[in-house]
Length: 441
Image (cartoon, rainbow, N blue to C red; front, side, top):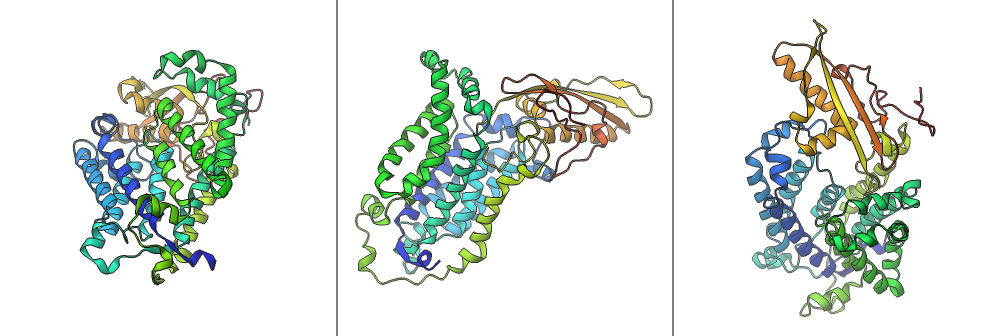
């Protein structure tokens, strides 16, 4: 603990702030012309947020464009270090709201952005090369406590560790999932022969395990650091080119600045900045934040990914405990679903087509995710209630994981309009199966 409070050059944190702010701006600005905002937040008639955040619907529709433009501007303010705490705080609130108001395009890196934003709020990343310093030179600092680097190293280590553990399941180890992943890749048709090769699938599977499991130790060890840097560049740029996963590869690469000696980062990016050895040791007034805020936060981040082990059933099937657990690109799920709506009084079936009710992305979400299935049932219940019609809803849902057979997912005899959602444990209306695909009572 004593070493964590030693002063080091703050160049890695300053460089990360600049790069991170640019990525935040890019992620939000580009989402508008690419049509992401339109498809996910402006056009849908039905709103399916994370459970409990239905009030965020007020931002959807036309106002969401201004919402995203505001986030982009705040990202630029973070990059240049202008009113750092305010701009970063507002961005974190708005981005968290955007994350919570939509589930149809859930992505792990959206959640990772929230986590890093929260950490960065407590770090002195505006103390050099910032507009804040230009406006108020008295806040300039050349050093920071060593823990400022280590909290970010620890957080990204959590991500890679759980991403490694999650890959130890049969469909990953035998290359089945890699085959599925690249069989749907239409970005590079000239590489189809390679993408169809079984040995390529095995290479992707095991190199993924090795990379996720070894990259942090390799970056920490000075003799393997440069090799790890080259491996990171190849791995993440390959993913960026073939998998089309947005800013995440570049976001992951940006953490590398914390693994190199701060003096090396200073020489590379801030040649005119004084060396730490030539300046007076600065006093840090925010060291208590490590013990009071950041260590408890990191403990929470360490515990969240293991919660699915405490929930009945296989998370690959039930999805319970899947989110916030760094289970990234592990499986494909396909499903089809039908909502049977029955008038409670007359017992007559009300004709209803779910495909005309949801967008294609929402339909994919509702066809494979139990929480979304339940939410749509509650939305329909409320809509019919406004017409003074009490209804029962029965779901016919079949799902397959990877190349496994389709199996019934939801108890078809249960009235989902009156079913309850368990936020923390297994929902008994999700059917479970044994190895022989027989329902577990």
